[in-house]
Length: 151
Image (tube, rainbow, N blue to C red; front, side, top):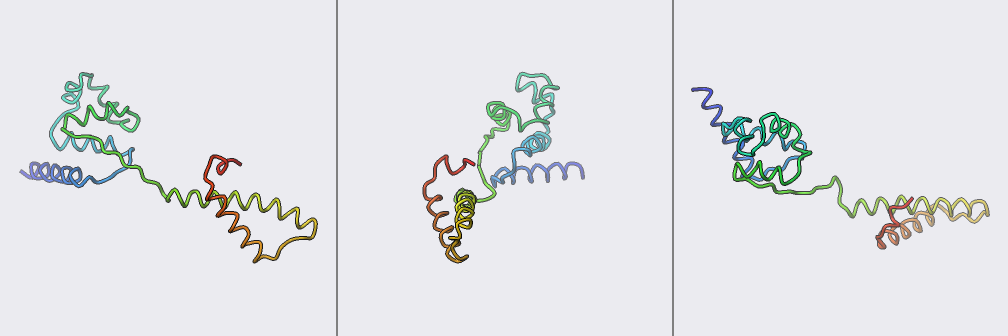
């Protein structure tokens, strides 16, 4: 009886996570499918049969789901009448990435020019240097192309 309550609770938890469209990383996909399979009482052997493959092959797929082709994942999910929704997220905004790269490039180019100016004793004061560096960084960031990423 306790075992059945646990199974019902687990089924509800998995169902709620799916219905809420809870996101997770690709390396957790296999574990999610295992949880779905177990929560619905389907064995690996039964899954393999539904997919037309052998059980050891299905076992390998579950363990390495993040390396599967999307078609394979969709076929597995179709057994649960599910589909794969993909979301891309980044640790920082693309604008922040561009701004950081523009600043890196501006500092690199400015340091060369500043070194030459120092040799000729024409170095601007720190405030002027920082203002010009900021202007140059903004100019670089406003002209986004492949040269931004070249060293």
